[in-house]
Structure formats: C-alpha cells, structure tokens
Length: 321
Length: 113
Image (cartoon, rainbow over all chains, first blue to last red; front, side, top):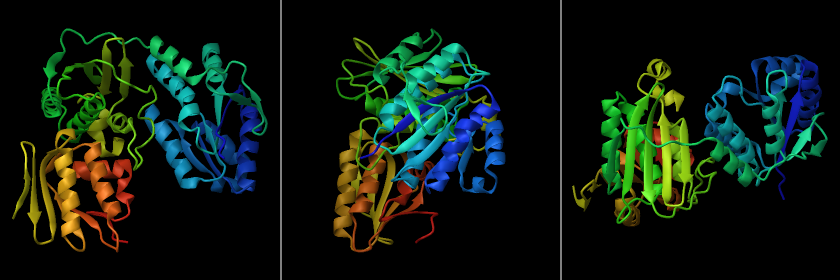
C-alpha cells in the first residue's frame, strides 16, 4: 500500500523556510530515505549551511533546471521515484513562479493539481514551498487548492480546507487559458494520412528555418498527436502552422468524438502501451501541447521554439531536449 | 539481399552478414503490422543475435519503437536484438524514452555489459 503525500507550505522568511525544510530533510536522512531538494539557489544554500556534512547525502537540483516545462518536472519526479523507491522517498519541490506568463502560471498550477492524480501510486512525500515574500495572494490560494494538505514544520500536516478536486481544478485552468483559432497568415491544409502530415510539417518548418533535429522533433510531435487523434481513413486532419516571436505553432484538428484525458502524456511511456504515451513524446519537443476537446471535435496545439531561438543556436539541440 | 517487405514508405531487406534486417524509410501506424511481422518472423527464423540496420530509417513513431523493444524482450537464451548502425534521431528517441536499457536490446554506441 503506497501513500502519496503532497503538501504545500507558505513561508515568508529564511528562518521559516528552514523550520520546515530542515526537519523534513534531516528526518529523511536519519531514516535512510531518499531525499531530493529542488528549490532556488538561495534556499539550497540555506539548507547546505544548516545541514553541514549531512548535506552531502541529499540529491538536489536548481529548480529552474529540473524541468524547463511541466512535463520535464513530472517526468523527473516519476523517474526519481522509480530509481529510489520503493519505500518512502522525500522531495522538497519549489517551482519557479517569478516572471512567468499568465499561461505558464496556469500550466504549472494545473500540473501541481495533476500531480495528485499522476503520482497517486507512489510513496513520494512531496512538500512544495511557496514564498509569500514574492507571490500574490491568488498564487498562495492556488497552492492551497492544489495540495490536499499543508505542512509547516516538515513533519505534521493539516488538511487544506481549500483543496479542489483535480479534475475540476484542471478544467478551470483550461477555461482560464482560452485558445483563439489560428491566425489568417497560417499555412493550412486538410490531410488524409500521417505521411502527408509529416511532409507538411517538415516542409513548413523548413520554410521557417527549422531544420535538422529541430524539424525532426517537431515532425515526431505532430505525428504522435495525429496518431492520438486517430487520423486516417474517413477521419481527415486539418492542420495550421504559423510563426510568431518566440515560437512556431501547429494546430491539428479532427472532427468527431475524441476521448482525451486532460493529464495525458505527463509520465514517460512504460512497456505496456497507454493512450497518452505519444503525447508524452510530443511534449519532449514542444513548449506547449494543449489538448482541447469541444462538442464537435478536438484541437491540439503544439508550440515549439522558432529557428531564432538563440539558446538552440548556441547549444546543441539534443542537449536541450 | 532478399526483400522482405516493399511498401510505399517502408522497405525491409534481409541481411545475411550479420544476420538480420535492414529497415529503410518510415515506420508509422499504417505499416506497423508489416514491420511487426517482419521482426517477429526474423527472430523466429534466425538463431543467435538478430541485427537491425536502422541507418536509413528516416522516421519511426513510438509504436514502432515499442515493437523493437518488445521484440528484444521476447528473445531469451542470451540472444540480443542488436541495433547497428542507427540513424542519430532514432538513437536519440530510444535514449529519451529510456528503452536503451531494455533487456535483450543492444544499441550501437553502447558498451556491451
């Protein structure tokens, strides 16, 4: 029997952060449990100073680099659990919130809520600190809505009175992130099969300067999404592709009923096939994969960094994936 | 070199030395059944390690990669499914998913344990 514990904690000083984090980490080490800390460089330093020599046994990550995107985050937690479980595995996880777009904030809050479903079968004990010195009241409220319980001392927890059912919370996030249709300058086509889609995406990516592994990754993502949408005989695919500052977008749409789990594709494929596996693969290459079913069909939007992304020009693309 | 399968997007040839298959073109949902059958038949027919030459595999989807992993797992008696040479993007996908650690699978460029 496993128990996933997912707790939020709100702190407004270094001392308060340590009053929670130090017992949580030190107790874990004393019990020979795996402990990972992924937080800001400043908080990592606080913990390093407080733990002294014991700190060398703590797995850690500067939080901005453990999952650029939400899928990287969920995958990292899952793989840490797979490597260090079974048995209790502790994770202190403080995401980056500052400087994010409203869409990004909603995506990360959506993920925080989704973790309650994704990690339900694990023995992870996760505490997510929220810095009240930097975050708005709405952000702190969202923390209480996405975590079933609250922990102040790294040991005991109280139920969160504001906790929201993840499915309902996720629907709310999606409603808060409206997705207007493709712009009039988008290249578009109606395609009958996957090979035609790959040719379209590869060609349109090339026109926009995306070539080599970047174009291949985009094509892999589009193909997996179209496979997920069961494109094929009698089910044509409408596709639109366009570019803006910072991104190339691709919308893929089929008409008809699509069973789309809103948390599809956040955990890596296992050997036994699951419906969201291809979506996980698509998410490896995309900054966003938005799955939007409606009454008539389903649209999935992919967003990849454009050819002008300097980061990808200066560092081999494989490293960033 | 015998032509095992010749489709619009995918060609599979039997190789004698090393014994195995050369897969050229694109594997997707539409030719997955043919790809699966060729692999299944090859490992039944050939004793010992079976080699897959994936240098000219220009596209493969997740389901196709799963067939490779499943075929490797089904081998026993110390036999391996050896992927060599492998197109870089295919190598990258297998590592990304984590299926390079599949029992019975040997990926070019990896140390043999």
